[in-house]
Image (cartoon, rainbow, N blue to C red; front, side):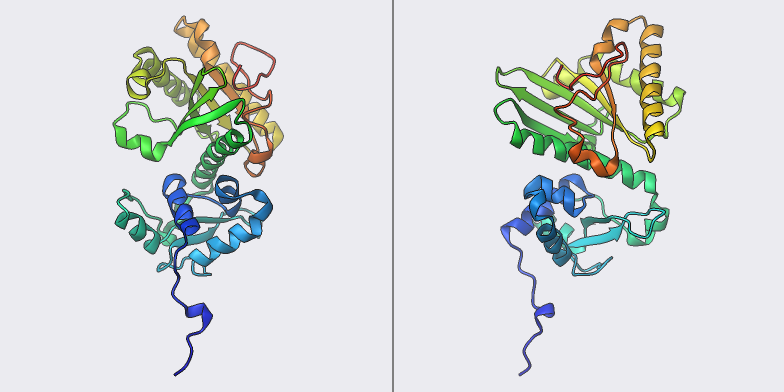
Length: 291
């Protein structure tokens, strides 16, 4: 009898494989680097990548695999490889009792849009960076809760932020953050409406009813291909926020807002949660997020 080639051997999931599937259930779109920062260490990125490729059947768009792998659409030839759940991965999680009410269609990728995927990846990275920061800063700030928009959308909220994060410091003070990812696609009228909806959400204390914490900040993270574009967009968002607060005669609410800009590929080195890179609409100097 012929021996079965190793490449055709049945794939037996390890506990770490299951952790990766669960991570993709939460974040939906991740690169190997994102997975390394979340569950492993960036020092063993090649190892993490090889495990994810194994779960993808070693192919792009392997419909039968636990993961689907595809290239982030770019103008260059070396776009980043992105992973999402494949058919077997969805089935495995459903068997484990998790709701999986979405799936990636490889045939739709040409029409999926660079902007949509960039938004999803930036959302993933900012939240994974929060988890990584928390592990490194356990004596100062600890991430106690985090939920992404995919999960929050099931709660019937009038406002669905891209993520909801709660940090707690050594003294027990909690920092509640409604995180928003900006890709520069909203013009002034739509953005001000976006801000107004969040102001009403906070004023009605809907966030308190849902999450049990009153103190809140709304943090916008924007990005762009060129530094001048990122800086211009950041300044524009700050101006629009301040204009709306003035129109509503609630300028003293300016302290609830933070805006920063990052490069998609440099999120983990940007120091989002520790450096003074955040701006308030009524202040010229940057500040750390937690001040």
